[in-house]
Image (tube, rainbow, N blue to C red; front, side):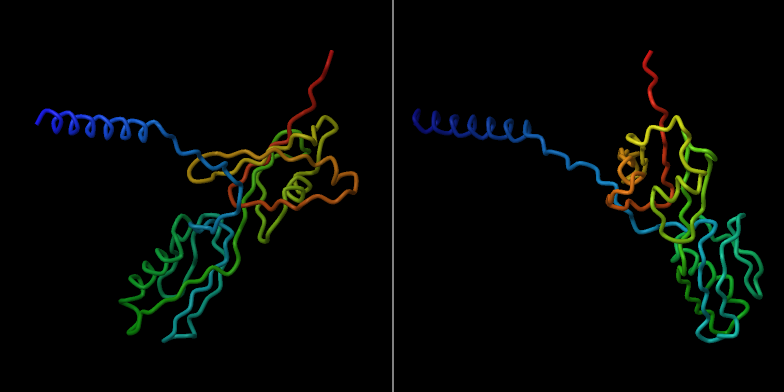
Length: 201
């Protein structure tokens, strides 16, 4: 009887130790990778195609205006920016219901606008809107190129990944000397920061 009690106690103790050890183990976090992600929300500058299967004469291909709206037949201006393609499609179906007997509407993203902010040691810092895939170097050149004080070794690409700002440091010295380096493409919302060289006195 006593041996059984002792054995049971040992088993409970072993289980408790195993549980504590399991809780102490930490799962290593994978490093954040700056990869382009599928666009989620429509932004000004995106071009969308609005199709009406039952009324093809109303089909439209439009660029979302700077105010975030589309101007569509029968219903006028509709806010598109800040919505997903699916949300916009549902809203248009609802708005066209009183106007059309068959209110089926299909919305597709035709071309994607890529807004990029370039700051720091460039000639014309500010926001640039690309309508095609563009590299980090292209964005810097669109901002007027580097200033004489620019540190090409430590160009920062800042991107929101899973709700957090992640930074990748890029060395552009080689490409400016004509040597090949892998092209790094911008994603919508990227910030490119070119620091100045540290002056040693």
